Image (cartoon, rainbow, N blue to C red):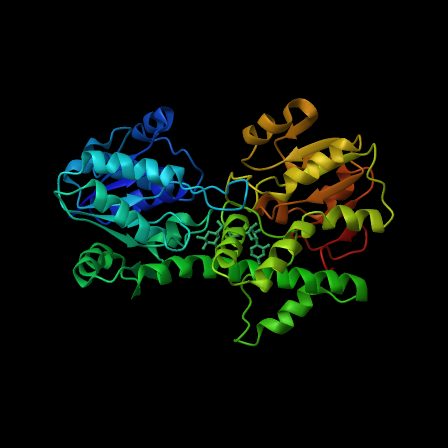
Length: 426
Ligand code: UDX
């Protein structure tokens, strides 16, 4: 069993660490956040993910995982995974400060030949540069850098890691490939080997392609709105063609989260720097930017006033089963509605504190969707949480002043016409 260090205990780091411990390795997860380390060592998850708490507790008990602020564990590590954030900077580039901080710390402590496994999404060519950077600093040991992009999605992160569609390994060195392949063998997942830059590009191309599918279907949904087609029927009709498929063709308010918005822009930048252009991705980003506000636009077009009303907001996170509100359409729309003097009720099954930090007591927070709907003029759905999808006609009719629902995720279905219901492309 390998000794593994994971640097950066956010979504990717924590889930990767737990998965590697689960298959029998000894894992130290490093983070600069003292509070996070304390919580995780006492078995309290710092993110919301299905099954994470059970696996965390199990592997803590079996002493296969531990959390620390110190890099001393790097000394005898066989593998050092890097899973720190690469946030978007002001220019749309990926900010590599956390990556280089981590590399500087690792190189201070390394006492062995070791392999750095880069899981963070980094600009094309970065792994090559990092290996050269390390070679200048560490003379006594061999430190190889392998690109190993991560494809997990929030909300299904544990399952995505334990049952990944593929493991991509980027390095032109058979010995290192064999080492890393052995580490991943217990997962029994397809392993694809290629050079570093190709591996880096697989990640960007996959994410931007998925984002492109979403923006494409959103444009078709907007057209459906104009001509009286129903986007759900249109996608159903398309999806029987196996070349098209049904996945990532749900129309709505566009993509949010920490990956698609950042990676689409970073790939555009990379193309520009390399005298290429990505016209499809430029449009993907533009469409997504506009799509966020389609629900409010639709309400106005249908003749509803968005001033001085009481409005129910159902769902705050950028997608269900996560407490992440990064680039969530709910946030920018709430701000617009507040600016127009509306009184806002909000409900989300788990997000509250993060939104309270942003809006404080400008919003009223409710524990159930029914209470949230009480006395409201209009309802806007921003996230397709199970608790929201399962709402029935009567929940709206009994609680709202008049049942008017704008569904930004096309997740509700009503049999009668007792509710004024509007979706995106419906
Ligand atoms: C994504 C990728 O799926 C994952 O492989 C990568 O590693 C990180 O980025 P994530 O951001 O967690 O994962 O969420 P995902 O489920 O892909 O959804 C992204 C956004 O697209 C969400 O805002 C979601 O609401 C939206 N979306 C998704 C749609 O609007 N329509 C769809 O059909 C699918």
